[in-house]
Length: 158
Length: 416
Image (cartoon, rainbow over all chains, first blue to last red; front, side, top):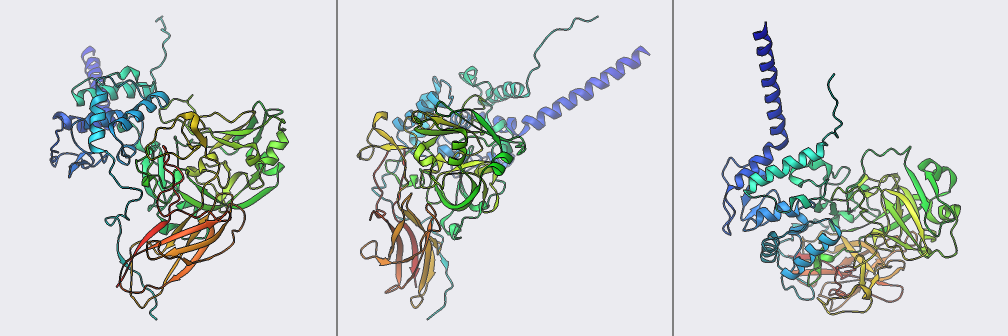
């Protein structure tokens, strides 16, 4: 009888344990496996990820697909810090000098709840100033020929 | 009997956050530095339910998403071709997270403030029953529309051309409601509060609380609206209630509206102060640093136009005439002349432009364009307002936050 009860209890614990593991996997599986893939700190030459990498975590032409961020030195810290609050798109669509990026961090710390960055700040600033620097476009840029999709417009002939 | 220990239950968010930080730490092979400074409710986005933040429900799939947290999406110019912008095509500029589980039966609008004679609340049913309703076609344009072109670049969402739209808005006049509450003689401004929540998750943090001078609030076209083009306002555009102020930066037209304050001074909510929605009071050189005291609140959007047909990139034959059309608007003023150029601004030909349906509605223009020979062309459009002020061909005055770019719209055309 006692044996039966302990057997029952053990099974209950086992089932519970499995459920807990499954729950954790559902919650964090993708993320954790994603993070584990980062075991090597990315260097300036982007690493092509293997087939086992989830599609969103792949790097193509130096761009991390999930976030759209340049995959280079400082990527992990920039991703972890910036996307805690907002989309990575807010980073990738902006351009600024190191000083300009510093001002944005200061503004986010003063008004948006960004925490003190400590020794990570220079890493973040180096990354942003290197990969998201302004281009000289003068008083107005040309229409971007790369963006124009040429098509035949059907009109009546005269 | 077992002793019961009083213990606060760990919250799901707290649990998630701790687990998330652990996962991040393992993954990074390092501790998340200063993790204890993370605000209590903040979660890395990788661990949140993405649909919490990114839900473009009711919106056209061809909108250009600039930012998915908060959601900011603009309309490609060729999709703005309708006389009135359909709800699914109207741009979205959110500063925070829209409210969830809205119950229109219990939704209230409260009017208070130091220059209000009393504090008074209305349900949506009260507003509809007590006051006459009005409909106006009103153009809303984000103050930062066109920011993308400024050099040096300005921070923020890099809006290109399509943070603008014109819809029929239906609601009650703000002035009728304010007068029902009672306005003290010292009133100078009104400010709004909405039910959206701050990105940081901090429930106490106000996302955005802007407003307009009392004179603007009392204009006939200033509405508390619940309907857009005859339908409920889309969630992302402020359902179930929002303000509408024509000719001002769209940020003045507060969404998910639940409180209005009548102020005896210029309203000082988030994004009214500092550099937000302000430009230098006097012109400055590109890249100049401007002190806060030298920045002035934007109160009128400038004259502007868009070519909505054809889409940029059209290829036509030399013996064909190209019909062009689009819209033009000029803040509180009217567009009196509309021109196009196919020679980079050397010569300008007139377009036909019609009168606005009402003040603050955009106007429609058309023209038929002939090209002298084959080759690459750009069609430029230039509107002129009732004060004889026209759109510039280059960028207008640089300003630190990149507002008010009303440079001529250009489309590329090839003649073969």
